[in-house]
Structures are given as C-alpha cells and as structure tokens.
Image 1 (tube, rainbow, N blue to C red):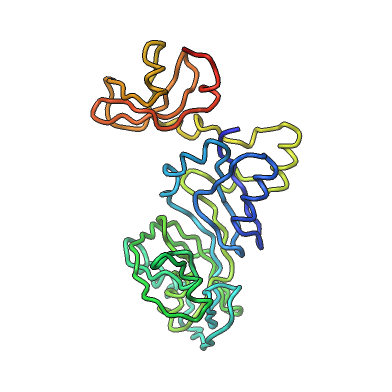
Image 2 (cartoon, helix red, strand yellow; image 1 turned 135 degrees about the vertical axis):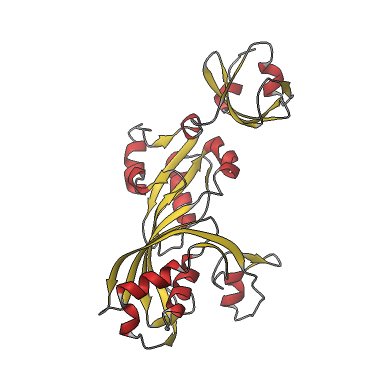
Length: 297
C-alpha cells in the first residue's frame, strides 16, 4: 500500500525504531522525511511502499514545535539526555515577561545558526555526533534558517523554565535556539522537552501512535493512511488518454498545453501518479504501481 502515515512519536523511540516497527506491521518499504531526536515527541510522517519515492517533495517543509527551555544548566548535547557541563546563575530580574518577550523577538527572521555538535550533519562524510562521541574537534559552519514566529506560552521563575511555541524553517535546530536564548538572557540553558506539532500541512491532531496504527492495520482498517492523490490534491490535474498513456508510463515526454508544475495524472478519471511539466512537455515522475500491473493499453 502506497501513502503516508502520520505517527505521533513517543519519547525514547528513535525515528529508526519507528520506521522498523511500521515495516514489520505493513511488511512494506518505509521511509521518513526527517528525524526526531529520541527524547522528542510529535509529528513523524512516514512514507509507505512506493510513496518512499516522493520524499523529495516533503523534506523542505516548515515546522512548528512546543519547547520547554531549562535555564541555568548547560549539557554537552544541548538537551536533557546529555551530561551537565556548566551551571550558571539565572538573574530572576531578566525573567520578567516583558524582557523575555523582548529577547525572543530578536530571533525572528532569517539568520545564521550554528548547529549543535551532537547532530547528524555530515562533515567529510562523517556525522557530527560521531566526532563528538570520540572527543574530536571539527569545524562547524553556520546554516541559514528562518524563525517565522516565537511565542511565550509560560514563564516559571521558580523552576527557571520557559515554555515556547516556535514556527521555523527546515534545518532549524531547536537545541541551538534554546542555548542562544539562554545566552541572551545572561545565562546558559538546554532544551528540556520538545514536541513537534506541525510538519508542513501535517498536524499532530491527525497523528496516531504506533500502537493505534498497528491495531487498525491488523483489522484491515487503512483509514489512517493518506493517499498520494490526497497529499497532492492542491496540485493541478492532467487527464491522459489511451493514445499517450503508454508513452507516458515508458518515460517518454509528451507535449501538453500546460504551465511548468507538478501535476496529478489521470486515465479515465483514475489516478495514475505524478508528472512534471517543463517547457510544455510532461514527463512521468511517480506512478502508482497498481497502474503498471493492469493491462491498460
């Protein structure tokens, strides 16, 4: 079965754990469009079956997170899983609502962010966290990100914690953001909790846990699987005919009166897959495998 399932990842599961679990349940190929840290929760879109081939359309989505920032303590991983490497007093006067909101506003917009050392970014073919675990130093280059919105939800002066909602671009590291916010408040800090609530149009309210998905799937209830046709419902449509369908499926470019874009393609009002129009020529990009198994010529 091809499509996307939205998993609400729980703590202590790695994204790889979730992928493997869903593979066993569906007995099909499974891929993801971006990982979540083991101690993070929330939206984890998984691609099922032949849908793994459309990941390129889904990896650049913006994100939204619920964040709990712990002030006064710094860890080597910038989250709650790491070892404490520094402790610093927190000036309670700096934790006024007015001042915290003022500091948060300085992070809005496009900016350069230094990724955390414990991340999966590769340098010379090796992931940064591998260098970190071996105690090796390596040059890290800042990356351009954008913070669209950052809202203060709660301020706990006694626990020295700040709850936030952050809307941001792909590639934003919330752990780095937490450390930078703490620094501008005159102290240190780390990301204590993280819950991803949105990935593009995918919302946490539409997610299911692995257990919920398994229970439904074993009852042949596939209602939680979003079809490729549904995902691309806002894209324009091209109706093919019996004369050009064979060429299209064989990868031959077809002349069409259409503007450059990604299109949903159909034959006799039945969804075939996705095609790309460039300079008035349509070329197959993704095809529903069920189409190829049928004698439609």
